[in-house]
Amino acid sequence: MGRRAAGLLPLVLLAACQGPQSTFAPAGLEAERVLGLFWVMLAGAVAIWLFVMAVSIYATRANSTTFSDKAGNRFILWGGVAFPVVVLTALLVFGLRLMPDFRAPADGPRIAVSGERFWWRVHYNAPDTPGVAKALSGEGVPSANEIWLPVNRRSELLLGSPDVIHSFWVPNIAGKTDTIPGRVNRLVVEPTRLGTFNGICAEFCGTAHAQMLFRVRVVTQEEFDARVAAEAAPATLLDHPGRLVFERSGCGACHAVRGTQSTGEVGPDLTHLAARLTLGAGILEMNPDNIARFVALTEHEKPGVEMPAFSMLPPEDIRQIADWLGNLR
Ligand SMILES: [Cu+2]
Picture (cartoon, rainbow, N blue to C red):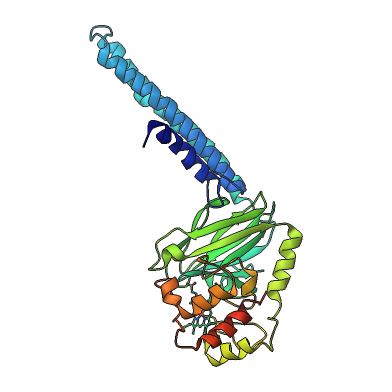
């Protein structure tokens, strides 16, 4: 690799910072502030490092009689004690002053998000009751693996988990927050830019941890209200042949399709599956072909998944299920 190509490397790396999963392209108040703090700390660290290096180089070259012991000691006291105390105190104050904004009360929707193995259970219009049982009781409008948020509103996310610890992270919007069994963590987010952003599980939680993704769609308030109303409605296409195959195959033991007899709660709510951008917690693009693939080759597509593969079903059955689910918007 030539030197010129090597010179391009930083540009390539920087370009990678602009995407939908980057703390360097903030789309939320908290992410903006944290990025500001990062630049301040980076600039300060670089300046101090350069200064220390310059002093060390100077010290190795200087004649040992240039300074008296007393001057040396004084320099150590100022540079080694007073200077760090001042700098760290200033940083502390700067950092603490960023926090009240993050802690300000929400004025937008309240959404409960539960980290499951290995997907995200979502409830819009979650009740405002403190305590795990209530907050993540499953009340509200169910959805999964995708969270819609109104732009410029402070939405409150209630984060929990039934069994293991996960960490909820949408790098463009806010810092990580753990989902901890037995408690509810509140995260208030204020998206500042329309768009679709990636969320990930940032705490190892089991085999499929790295495939536990989700999408955050920041939209206008009207679009948000329309989406929640649509999510609240029962499923359509009830006389589709795929529905019968779905029910006959036992999918309803784990999945709910509201408006039908399928009321399972083990897996994601599928009432409006096709309205999501991705399938299987962010691992496949949403379309009937991929639904068929996921149902038949579940473990192959997502090693460690908690859904059994249904490869024993005739391909025609799977196709019909996929055609039904793939049209439930
Ligand atoms: Cu996880």
